[in-house]
Length: 440
Image (cartoon, rainbow, N blue to C red; front, side, top):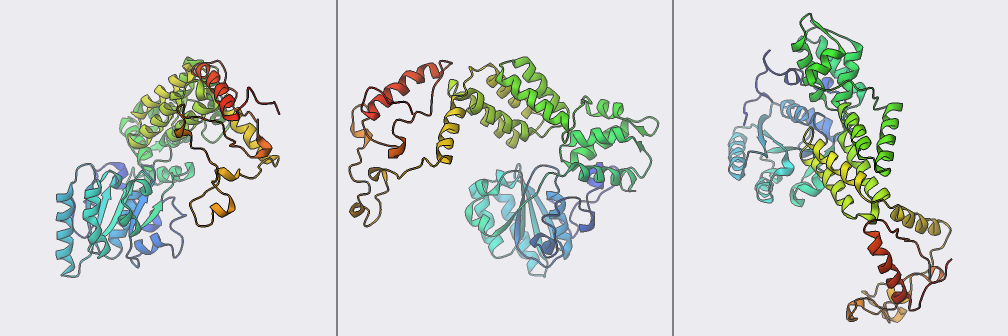
């Protein structure tokens, strides 16, 4: 926990480069221009004319801590920092008591809580009164959407602002400034364009990661020059030919997808490793794995989607480099799973019918009957409750009249769909009340 009128502890030449280069004013902030326009709530806070608590959420290295510090220095507010990883209710209450005493002498306190999504409900509830009564100005930082991790009363009392990953040009500006600025490398190192390009690639939109890589490379230099070989040796990553904004990006992800679909687990792992080594956003990889789990595996192995979703959660909750294990786990599962495109074909056929105007009225017995006058309209009348039948399934019309007998889902005989197929046939026969349904 830090106190005093300065937003952050003193910074010296031995401090990490990322700490030394933390913006000291709004003019030095790179990126997040969508939040810093004239008159915006965040700009007013930083300029000292706002008083609302704020929850900043976004990827690592996008400036959450920096913005919290700028808010605290705007009008000389005192700055207190807690981490949800180590602080409990006792620590929260201690800061609130300190802030209350400061108010008696006219001093305001900014309470910065890192990883606020990890606070329990009890810990968050302990903040409510202090936030509501403006005993503290809360600035919470989180990599999670606070709508799902912050209690509603605290959420409603705070501005929720989403920070975005820095663009490659933003990262390049951060690096060039660090190379030249006296707080940084002070122009003492010559950094090649190829080295800059590589650091930008591996940064993945994270300014702190880019500065850490630059610092490690500079410390390894014996002659004051930094080239791509030195960078890759310093940060232990291969300089893979891969451009996240160019053809290589699309070629590699295309090859990854097709290797998964083609059940070549080794090729899929190669392209996964290639993306990880080149600094591809792991969230992008996780999204592709979730898509492929339904598009190319589907009901042939319903657990593939569960594995892919779990990998995406590991990316969010744990981060890299550890999350690469979960991405590899999901890659292997999907690549080796039995394949079926029946799920994608089924929803595509249903959407095609909707696009062709085959919608029709919802059968009256399926309509909502939970309002006055519904029965008079015939809604929900005659509906047969499947759980009243011993088998849990009975004959009843479910689709609109225009779509009776439409078969969208056609299971394959691959994996679990080998079991699903006969069941689907049996269910259709019972539900439709006849031996089969005519083809459309």
